Amino acid sequence: MGLKHSQAGNSGILRFLHPAHSRAPARPDKQDQPLLHTVLDNMSQGVLMFDAEAKLVFCNRRYLEMYGLSPDIAKPGCRLLDLLNHRLKARTFSGNPDEYVAELLAKIAEGGTFDTVISSGDGRAFSVINKPLVNGGWLATHEDVTERRRAEVQIAHMARHDGLTDLPNRALLRERLEQELKRVKRGDSLAVLCLDLDHFKSINDTLGHPIGDELLKLVADRLRSCTREPDTIARLGGDEFAIIMTQMHQPGDAAVLCRRIRESIIKPYQVDGHQIVTDISIGISIAPFDGSEPDQLLKNADMALYGAKGDGRGTYRFFEAEMDKRMRERRDLEMDLRQALNNGQFALHYQPLVNLRTHEITAFEALLRWNHPTRGLISPADFVPIAEETGLIVPIGEWVLRTACQETANWPGHVKVAVNLSPAQLKSKNLLPMIVSALADCAIQPNRLQLEITETMLMQNTFATLNTLHQLRKLGVQIAMDDFGTGYSSLSYLRSFPFDKIKID
Image 1 (tube, rainbow, N blue to C red):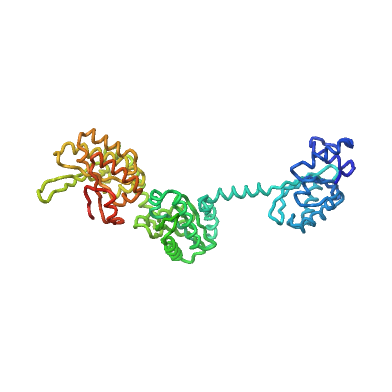
Image 2 (spheres, one colour):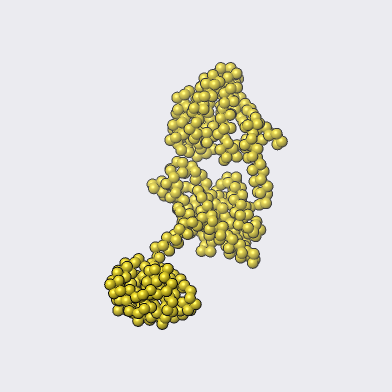
């Protein structure tokens, strides 16, 4: 392999090495040629030069290595078309050689640069840049961009897919929903399903996040097995999933899919030696009846999901216009609830506990009430769930406990006060110091305070819960189990902690 000793050939190579030269310099001395060979052969790119007749003038060693060519094939005088036909047989070029050469020559004749990416039959990709020379020929550089292209594809995939389950993420879900809605405008219909695992947080808290992650992967696999190829399944985050169901004939088709999903999801899972049983709640919106825009359909499906959870979970609900009204009312109530504590709108009512033998009052149970300035008295059943979801239950719960202790200080010494604890309070690291502070400020004995928890709370994060309860018990505070028999009733939970009182539902 050597340089063809022509003025055009040498000037072209030198122009490549020194692009600033607008005209061909004088021919280099023979002593410069070995240096030029060394430079070109050690480049990371393949370099070729062609004359005006599309015949090869020069190629470096890297070009031969990239395509597995011998110097006998890629030798000066070889036609570009013959070279491409040889590479086509060797599967290092894909496409039509005649069309490629015709397009390249047309571009060079115009004095333009011909850039392209060529794929090989073995899956590799090469960036090829052809720059015209003053003599009608051109200089070509070849660079293997296979890994770069794969990395770009991987990055693009990661940007639109969930890293844990490899399902489409919210962004890709929205893109596909926009595409599918174009068909809806032509007379088709589709369903958007929002799905949420029931009590997933409890599984995470009890068994740990690695187990929770494995469960989510298994759930994703089961969702895939329940849907068809045209449908889209996405993970929105946490234990929230969404499905676009296409090619619907009637809304009942979505209900059939929901039942199929639930039958699959409720089957037990085996994860790292643990058997896990869970359920799923589903909300459904139908296009175009419930909306014709992606955000509107997702919002309505989410509201229907909220309705399914309100029905006791483990079921599905279709969106209804009334849901939007109820959701707005709930948002208004939440905003008012955030101001209620600061504005002194809460009050405690007390339900007496009477000893039937002596007819004496032995304790009072503190009951929280909200006196809304315009709505009047609001039931705890309406605002406590909102307080728990928003985290407001922690400051509200502290107010209840401190207020109850203050009022207990004015009662006869044998009368106790019972206060309900929420799950969020029981998990709070500030619970014990807050109770110690409240008892000290009010100067009442710890045994006059009785904290009530539910058996469901005891099941959640049992080790940490029991540790907190034992610390409270050492302090002298009494612990009661409330509503025994309404959760996962088991006498074993009664043995896990020595309760002072059990309230049987």
